[in-house]
Length: 171
Image 1 (cartoon, one colour):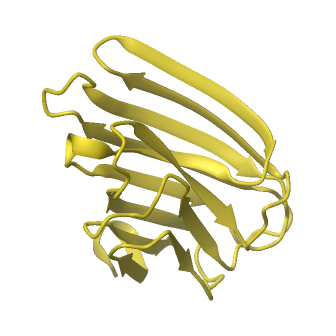
Image 2 (tube, one colour):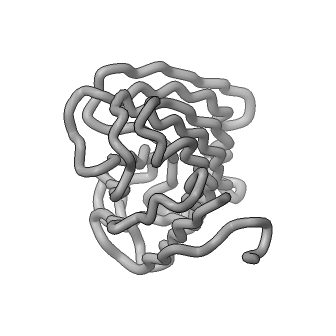
């Protein structure tokens, strides 16, 4: 048995514009994406990273988030009918830090219901003007197909060389 009941399926690391986990087995109850992500984007800003199931970029994703940004600024949003699901924020520019996350993907192989996800993430500003972010994302992919591939996109630029994401299965 794997540590914490997580069975490693695949790890992807290094600089890239997106990462794809393919040929995902249907033998688990849930999937977990866990990792450390940075970006090569030069602008000092918080970038949102998106997840796409089975290459589906149609308007079938709903996402909601709540995050604490800077010292006292809560922020939240809801998006529907988009071609991807937001699941993570990472810093750019001179922050020189990574965002850490864990994303649970529930019922990914159950073709009788939609696929749901919940992600926790955050990063520290290390004393800069922006103090960092701690956030929770959740949502659904309104499709009953079994998830066989997952793609993560960084639309602000490349994922940095310090990025490492592991896909786990959980029974």
